[in-house]
Image 1 (tube, rainbow, N blue to C red):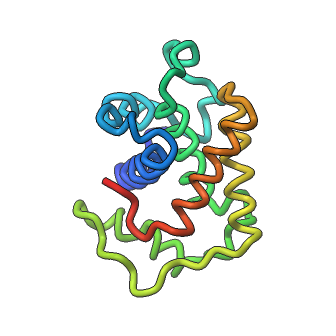
Image 2: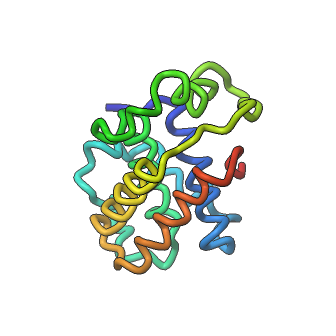
Length: 160
């Protein structure tokens, strides 16, 4: 199933923010490295595989971060299998609604979306599990997951 443009845009922004934190040297090549995974990876149906041999080329972290970000975005949008549904319509619209309605980035919301500790812990679990499914060692998977949670918690506007 093709991903909606707004979801791809949010995933790209989240992934770029995470890459900026853990591998800033990859930012100049981010668009090229992330593009195949933004357009061709469905976070819910790809079975945890990196496409076209990237596993051998994980000298860059951007593909893994992009796929992890896609999984987190998908989990947030569908409520992380019920556990993140407490975000409800208003909060979810605050995070993602503006991206669906506009081509331009939305201005920062008047109040940031509040995540509970449980919600952030679940997001971290999703991110670690996805990274490990992609063949990343636990320490790196945990670093990626921590950066994702940090981006959601601290960054009102992901880096573009």
